[in-house]
Image (cartoon, rainbow over all chains, first blue to last red):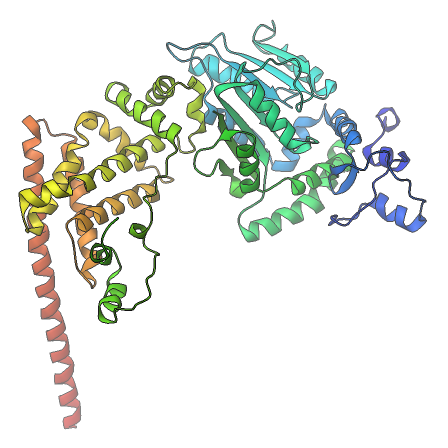
Length: 309
Length: 251
């Protein structure tokens, strides 16, 4: 069955001639990097000199999008399993808390909400928000537009929506979009912009934040749920050990895809800290309250919120 | 800008002692009153929260008040999600606003109550309690929010700040452990009176002021009782130890 799956990311990287060059920032040398050093392949200078990080590897910017897409194509079907493995099922509590905090729903005397869920392919957050609005606020009109760069994830989400009460598609819509551009979303049109466990995969996070600022109405809320830096020293040590030693192994055993999980834990390590990310959100034009973030489970995950002014 | 003399009063007893005894030429500006007043709320937050407080009289300390406040301030219904502590942010804002109003009353209260510390403390407590009058029917909801374990530390900090503010405005010059006991006792008096006020139906809250008077009298009596008890205990303790020593040295 393995031969039917698309090329794994590390295979793509090895075959690409516009390959990564430096490992100065890498804390972990992947097997492919060790092989490359051993074989001393002739280095080919890439066409563009702008590189970004893909986990702990550096790759040209124009390639990262495709690589990320491939990672998520290969994990689309087992996305829930992957999340359960990585967080012991706590991700469900995190997502529930995220939605409870945002408390979406049409208020008495208010308008129905337009919610944009970015990188929310399988619809985890979208369904939770619609359920919350419908059950808690008796709101049958607020709608969610789910966008993702990966069509496979959206297809999975659409399939799941057919089993819910939103099967007719009047309240939920799925579109392929690049979060840094969002060309199909008009300016000042969304009440709420959410991104859960997606923003660390973006090539250009400031561009995505600016796009979020563009599509939100003035007063609209930007909310991001993402893995972050653990704030307690000992917990951090345990967490790092677990991340780099256990998770890829579990990925191999559970989903037969070690490299995607390796990329995922590396991308978590690369993501800025809570304070830095709050700073980036403010730089994009959002106003934050207090610190701008809330830690979940000692900082393993964090919810950042900002309002467009 | 407060005068140097006033600024001495805010300092912790030991530092004040050192400062007055060895009046050094070096000036330190690590006290809050040596700097511009710090407002922890941005303009937009203040706008939203103050309009939300107007709705508290009608709806109570619930999300709906915050949402209405956002709407009135020109924001969307979803904007309430940006407040990290949710409704506790609303409670905190009310506490902050009422506390900062007290400083403006100083000239009036000093003139009306003269030099008496007890009377002025009583006046400040009453003025602060009057700040709760409009929302007192919903105040128990706020107390419930403050009692949540995640909110307790900040709520206690606000109470401590209020107590400190009142003693500062009364020109408290204590330079020893009394500094701490005064603030602790006033915090206890104030919080119990505030709770009493939530179920007081008398006209213009007369019963609450009487309750406050009784609590302040208690503090005075207890204070003198405790200090006499402390004196008696220390004397008896030393006397007993000396007696034992003399018995032992007799051999």
